[in-house]
Length: 283
Image (cartoon, rainbow, N blue to C red; front, side):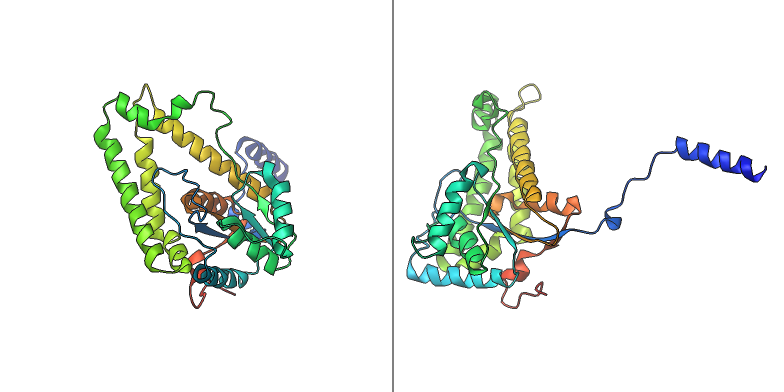
């Protein structure tokens, strides 16, 4: 076979074979990301079983908040994102200006106590709202009412087991918060064991309903969709070289971390390292 013919054959084969998929190894991360899962300090009461958070504006808790913020400052974030809907960004900006300049006290929630305090201490211009309701595609809320589905399909045992697991987990959270510090609580909410248990709870919930009436699965579609929308907002807010700090409800930890890690766009940081006394993950 002549050299010219070999070249033609190679060209034909190249046209027939699929193009290689770009490897994440060939595309280095553009930014760093630290996700710190928090409890809801303001007691919004939106979860299946809710923690009874005491007043974080009390003097003892304020000392603990400052301790947490000091630990987060070592990460040196360039961007802080929080659990607020983007439609409230202007309100968030106004609150940041007021609290950071000392014109108003920080509200008793993790967005202001942790997110705004950290951003203010670093001289950032504000925090970024990235939340999503996930309900935009739901016309009829009854289609994701998993408790009603459990009653409708006589799945009381499955639903009760789900509730018992969630309530036992929250009871342990409550005990840690009652007897420990805020950093103790945050460490718990970011351990692999807590995250694994959290993930199992969602899987249990997804099983409620039937093949013909998959209410639990539909609810999970909303949950997954919400977290994807949140991650997309985080990614859009990220510039090359950023060190992103995410302060969010701990229940989102599994999916947001998974999406951020699998995107290949972030060097992921272990929150336990930064929340620990020695910060072994610190540079």
